Image: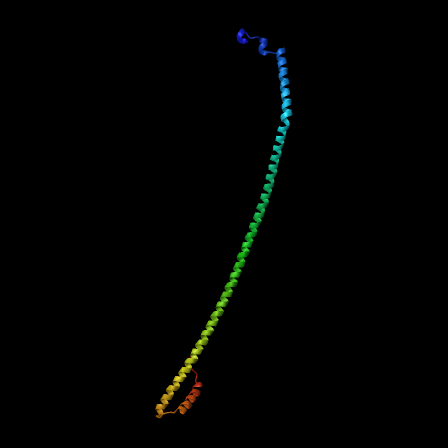
Length: 180
């Protein structure tokens, strides 16, 4: 209107007349009606949504606290189990060392026993060979003595005389000690 008339009306710029107040009253009434309708239609669903969300958040926090408590318990249990495993490991190693020492001692005792048996058997064999060698030497000495005696006597010794001389030489040599 300002453009048409060229002059603005002062009462229209501020516009506080009855028409303005009636329009303002209808606008407030419409606003109140819309607020009432929207609150009646949307307030409870929005409130329910917000309450459900708040409950979900509280449940999530409670669940997180419970999970944290369970995790701390699991950690404490894990640490206790690690300490127990360390002590079990030390016990197992100690038992293994003891068993190894016992086995080593048994093996050494067994080896020493076998070595002693081998040494005793070797000594028996040496003694048998020594006795056998002594018997052979005695036999050869008797044969040599008999041969020398027969040449010295110059006669032939018959079997009976040879046996008698043999037995007498054996008896005489039985008293002789042989040097080792």
